[in-house]
Each structure stands twice: as C-alpha cells, then as structure tokens.
Image 1 (cartoon, one colour):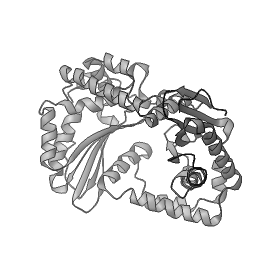
Image 2 (cartoon, one colour):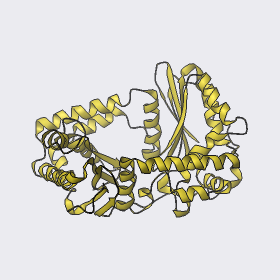
Image 3 (cartoon, one colour):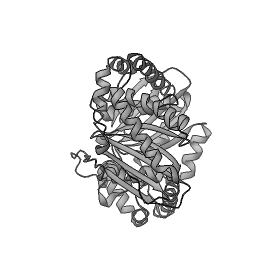
Image 4 (cartoon, one colour):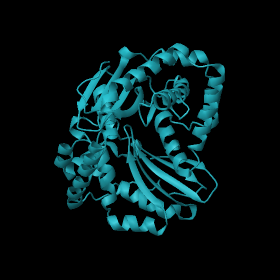
Length: 398
C-alpha cells in the first residue's frame, strides 16, 4: 500500500483507504460489485461485528463511511486527532479482514436493491444514469449501483473473487490529513481474501466512447427531466482549466448566463445548471434541468440557444477575470475540511501520482486566455451532443 499524508493543524483528522476499483473497471458479469463490496466490508470482520464497527466509531464521536465512484472506491474515518489511531484500527480492519458472512450478504442484497429502487424513483438520478448509459455505451457509462437482477444473483464467492482481483496492496492507497499521527500500515500483510489474489501485475483499464444522439424515456411524471451533454477531453488535458472557467461562467452559479436567462428571464424551470465530469479516458460537459412536460421542448430549445450565444460571443476580459476569482474562491472553500483535503489527496495520487497544490492550480487558472475559452467552446455543437429526457412526453425535436 502507498501512503500519502498532509499535515494540517486543527482538532480533526481524516484518513481514507482508496482502492482503484470503480464501476468503470467492471466487466459485464461484475456490474455493481464495486458498490456491493463497499457495503459488505462494514458487515463484520474477524475481530468485529457490524455493531462493534459502528459502536467503536460512535464512542469516539467520529464518522466512518465509504463511497464508490466510476474510477475508485474510498473508505474513510473522520475523528478528533487524539483518536485517529483508534479509528484507523477499525478502518483498516474492515478493508483487510471482512468476513463477508453469507447471511449478511443475503440481507445486504435487499438493502442495495432498495437503494436502486430509490434511485430509479428519483427522476434526477434516473435521468442522470440514463444519459450516461446511453451517451457512453462502455463500462464507465454504466450505473454504479448495478442492476437488481445481478445484485440478487451474486454469491460470496463472486465478491471474494472480485476483491482478489482489485483489493490488492499494490492497487490501494492510504491518504491522511491531520497533525501527524503514526498509522501502522507497513505491517499489514494478511488479507482475509489473500487466497483470491491473482494476476497481480494486471493494471485495471477501461474504454471511453461518447455517442451523440437522443434518448426519450416516457414516464408518468409532472415534469420532464433533461440532460444535454457533449464530449470533452480527459482529466490529463490542461484545457480542463479553461473548461472549468467556461462552465462556471455559463451555468455554474446563480449569476450564470444559463440561470439568469432560462430561470430568471424565461421562467422555464426552477433549477438549471451546467457541469463537467472528467475521467482518465475522457470527459463530459452537460446541462441539467427539469420543467413541466408541456414546456420541455421550449427548455431544450432555450438551452441550445444559450449555448449558441456563448459560442458566438464568448466572454469579455472583465468577465474572465471575475470568473477566475469565482473559481479560486469556490475551489479554496471546498477544501476547508480535513475530509475534503484527504479525498483530494487520495484522488490526486490515484490520478496524477502526485499532489496538486491549489496554489499551482490557481497559477494555471490565471494563465487561461479568452482564446483558450473559445477553443473549448469550439468542441461544443448540437450535432455532437446527446439529449436524454425523462417525463410524460413522446419526443423532442433536436
């Protein structure tokens, strides 16, 4: 396991174990297993029951949790610095020594299936998953939760085989932010699933492919939920800094062109925003909103109109200066807590194999020119976009 640390004074410390194992790396027979494993390690170890795990962290007044993304899974604890070693002992135990008890596994299937039901019943979550699965027809576009049918079919052997494939020391990273506690990780050499380790020299990989088009899902809802997006480049492309600024200016806040025009002036929706997701193999810019079914066509038309205006007019030097200030302020505030800094630290090393100092990022942002903004906007056009709509509609002209 690699270990990375940042010293931060204060009363709270955070430590996370990152595994290069997310839904993007799953094959067709493994859909949802990254997330399933994330759940199951909390259900008991050789030393602790699921109640013991929760109780020990609760006594410390801390938080223990996990999340699964497209490209990695993170298990973390956040406690007072005085208790970080005790919390670390619980955290490493659940990741290294889970029992994956069969009776608990069967119960957890029900929990995850209800999580899938909840996601499907939430129109915003449902349209998001539908957009990515339709626009990116490779593993990275598949829903992180998997399908109910596959979750119901998995056995303990399936989870152990999956963990043996991905949960190996060379595929794991520890990130710690706090006052410098000594965390014992070098002596860890016994994994409860060690017998399943295989092909340790294989590096997980995946394919990224974006397909323009249209996907209309008819559902009996009061509103139509809309996502309109197009392909960008990977996280390793330095044009990402111009993309961040262009996105924030266009639809990233309440003073943005998108919000002011479509909500404030045209009153077509309650909420609307644009966003960017970058991956190691590609990226996506998208607009997300919802409106009454009868206004869905007008909403899509208005979004395209605003994009065309932005592509034609760009922004002024003054607006570029303001959005740089906006970006630096929002980015800096997002790193106020030790937990957010810990997640950044782990993500940086998984992605770049080094820490990306915010001050260096700010310097790169300051160098972005108006020409850089226009270069990014040249990549966005209607014939390259994918539209997904979920609501009580039959079609949208696009």
